[in-house]
Structures are given as structure tokens and as C-alpha cells.
Length: 442
Image 1 (tube, rainbow, N blue to C red):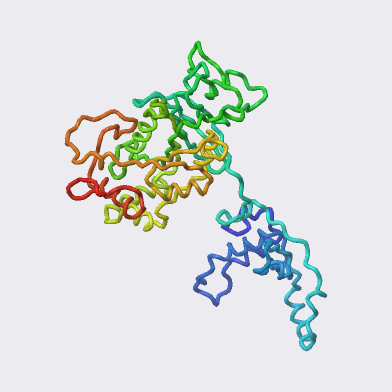
Image 2 (cartoon, rainbow, N blue to C red):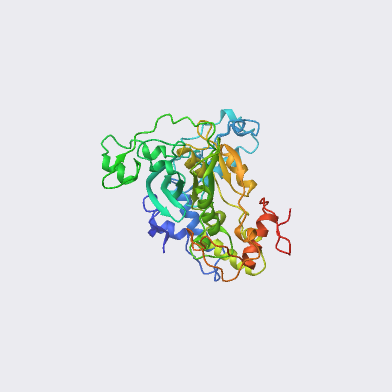
């Protein structure tokens, strides 16, 4: 395709088409073999004319501000250099002036003409892979919908979130029987989304609030009570333990098809079961279990399903889950927790003003990462894999009900053991290793 036919340059070329084609066309009889770099000529010319109007003699020439002090390493205020239109004369004039001014002293820098006005490059012409600086923005999350989900472990409330950082729909699974109360009597304050209960528009109707899940109590044909906008919150009684929280990353292979290369399906089922258990309080009483599982859409510890499948092939070649990630060019763990903390804060948890959390995890790095994001963790609660708690595993045992394909039973195998041992030995997870006689090591 001729350069002048490029749609990107159609509105920027002021040169005659024949001249531009001559720039990029092999000519003359003396050259029979094309230059090795001839194919990049159209790209160079395209880059030149994308910067703005040019002339025949100094197309694309640019210079930077001579005030070097502004960009010195010691200057705390860094400014982005601003390109200016070149004031360079045509080559023929420069050659003539060179003969007459060869013996003269150059003019001081301060006495030279000021550069022309900066060239504004259209945003649409910026290369798609060019790194562009963006001002950091505060993470904001909004609960778009909430609904009741019955499970074998009890009723949970599924919250779906949108955010201003990615296009993924992250989730929060809230286990909180107080939300089913129609009379407002709670043994502990309900865990509710502030963004969901807020007034979205002045004209919103009660039905619109009900449809998105902003209601209290049980939603039925007879009972339909929209929630009220959030207030300053309910003071937590000192004897009520902090809610139990799990940050769980999406795992299609472990949760949907029951892969035993990992324990993710088991962890999700076990987290819902553990959080649903009654919690003992003072005076030999107990209250219903309450807590949240933040379900983050970051498959394969943040590398995505495609790279995760490739990592599985590397594991079959002898790598473990850590070295396979490194072989593919990733870190051992690519996950981030800024959005997870924002979701918990929207639920009134983990901030200095809200309730602290008891974190259900074996991973000390996860605890440290969440605390760096400002989450107030008051306790770490361990999760021992079922296959390590019940050894030896009975063959053909009856399958127990659970919320994933793995269910509530105990599964085990060589791949799962290798994965669990790697998390302990390579990633520092706080778990006791098994000895050869299947007993837990101290």
C-alpha cells in the first residue's frame, strides 16, 4: 500500500503524493538488491508526519527546553519535557552560513531565539503500546445487585460489584443470618453494603430498590421492605467476635470441574461451612456465624486461565506451581488486594471506624498485603486441608454435599499433595507437613 493511501495520515499530509511515494520507493538502476531496512521507511515517514505540519527541509525535527535545571536529578519537581517545532534552517542555507561563521564564537544560549509554540499531538495518533502516565485514582466500588442464595451450609447473600479499576465483576458472599430478620432485632449488627443501600437517583422507586436487592428481612410477595440509606452504623457490642473473612480467588478448574491439582474448590466450600458455624460468646452463649468471602476474579493467582493451563503443562514437565509461573514470566503470585479491601470497607468491615476482621488464611503474605492496603486484621484463622486432616483417605467413601464439584468430602492424590507441599515449602504457607506415616508433623 502506498504511503499516501494510509488512512491514519490522510488528514496530516501536506506534501504532494508523488514526493512522499518517492521517499519510500526504490529507484535507480544501480541498486538491484533492496535495502534490508527498506520496509521501515513508511513507518518512519508516518511517524514524522503524525507529529504535525512539516516542511520539505526539516520534517519532524524537534528540540527540548534548554532549561536543564528543571529536569536535574536533585529537583524534586519533575516536569515532562515539552517538544517544540524545530527552527532549523534548510540544509542549503546552513551550508552557506557554515563557511561565513566558522571562526565566530557561538551566541550565548540565553540570547538565542525562543522556541516556537509546542506541537500538540492528537491523542488518537499516540501509539497503542506507548506507556502513558495516568494520575492515580482512588479505588471505588459499587454493589450493583444482591440476592439470597440457599446452600447446603445455609443461606448466603451474593453481592456483585463493579469498580473503576477493571471490567471484572467481583463478588462478595455474605453469611449473615441477621439480614433475614424482619423485626430489626439482631444479635450482631448486619453486614450490609453501603453503596447498595444508598439512594442512586432522586427518582428511584421502591420497586427498583427491591430489584437490585436493597431490602431488609425476607423478600417475598407479601414481605417487601426497601432498605434505608446507610447511617453512621450500629455500635458493636464488645462481646461479639469480629466477623470471619476469606479472600478467595476464582478457580475454574478447581471449583467447576473438580481438579485435584489444587485445593481451591475445597477451600471455597470449607470457608462457607466454617463461617456458617455458630460463634461462642460470653456467658456460655453462641450467636449465628457471620462473615464474608470476597470472591476475586483473578484466575491462577492473577495470571489468567490461559497462562494457568500452560503452567499445568509445565508442571507435567517437572515444574511446581511456583517455578511454572516464573518460567512463563510471571511472579509466583500476581494477585492484588486493593479491590478486595474496598469491597470489605463498603460492607463496613476492616476500617478503623468499622469492625475488624478475623482472616481465614494460611498465607502470611496475604495478611501482610491486606494490612498494607489498610485492612484491620485482628486475628488469623488457619485452614488445614481436609486431605491432611483425615489420613489415610478412605477409598470409595460416600460423597458429602458441598457448594463446589469437590463437595464436602475428602479428596486426595499425588498432584494435590505436590501442590500443597509447594505452598508450604516455596510460598511460606503456615501449615504442618505430613510425615510418611500420614501423621501431621509438629
